[in-house]
Every structure is written in C-alpha cells, then in structure tokens.
Length: 220
Image (cartoon, rainbow, N blue to C red; front, side):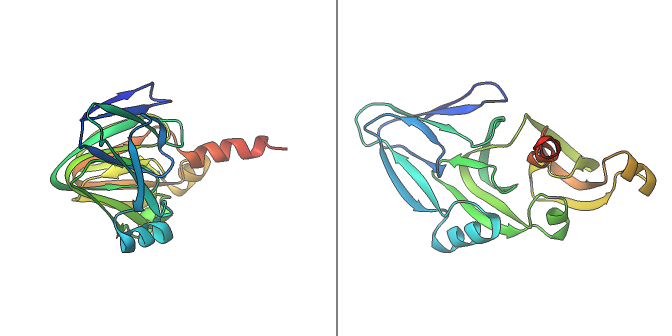
C-alpha cells in the first residue's frame, strides 16, 4: 500500500494506492473518488456494540466503508475529511492513541476502534465527554479544522479549549482559568486546558467553536 497526503493544510486529502488483495477502512462519506473496479462494503464502525457506542456517545457514524482491491493491478481511492484542515498519518505499533470525536478519517487492517470515557474536564473543555481510542498495529489517518501541531509534553503545558485533537496515554487534562478572574474574563480566553504528564499531543490551530462564535454576530 502506498499512501500520500496532498493538498495544503487548508484542503488536505489522502491518495491510497491499494495493491491486489489490500484494503483500507474509511469513515462514512470520506471517499471523494475511487477506481471503478474497487469493491466497497459498509460495516459496523468497530463492531456492532462499539459502533452503537460511537454513534450514541461520540456522534460518529454508525457505519464505516471498507475499500478492497480484488483486481490484479494497483487501484486508488482518494479520502477527504468534511472540514477544511490538515490530515496526518499516525503509525501504531501495538500501542494506543486517543482522538477527539470527528477527527478519525481512515485506518489499515490491524487497527482497532473503540470508545473511552474522557472525563468531565474534557467535556467542559469542549473536547467531548468520550474519546475515540485507536489501538493495535497499522496506520491511522486523522484530521481537524486548521493546521495540526505536534508537541512533546514532559511536565505541563496549556492548550485552549476545543484545540486538543489527540494525545497518548499518560497525558492528563485539568481545567483552569487562563489567568486571574479579571484577566480571564476581559482577555477573552476564559477557561483553558492544563495538559500534564509525559507524552505527545496534537493541537489544531483553529476551532469550529471559534468559527461559529465569529460568524453568528454577522448573521442577519
């Protein structure tokens, strides 16, 4: 399998070239184009019970699509996410990564999808009450609104609410005011997420919540 992330951070997409016998799993409605002789089958997202949980608790689609190459030559499927923004590839080697709802795009065989309680702090921080768990061995493609920044954390760092896309186990989230009460309210930052522990986090440079806040006053 050969994969390439193309486009700018605003309009990224993934070309997946499948060799004979290979397949890739993608979120519902992620396919923008594909070779006419590829096979596409809908299946429950992570199995029946996980699919129900992902639908009810995380707001993900109930089904995902499996694209299989049963021909004798290489075939291509192009995948996109619903919002403008960057896409990244995560390599799993028998380990685990947490993603915010809506950020999963696609994965290869060997990757398992699950749901885990993220805590009230995550919910108040507008990151979701539940998080998506990707684990196993293989590749995972994920994306979010805006560019994606990776940071190694060994101690503490501050991330604005609704900007945390993913993180490794060992990372803990705490909610706090950006500064003092007076500064937090007048400075417009309000609550922020204090990220503690040791591991890797992924941050999005834009947030849909911020976009909605900017657009609403301009609507008639």
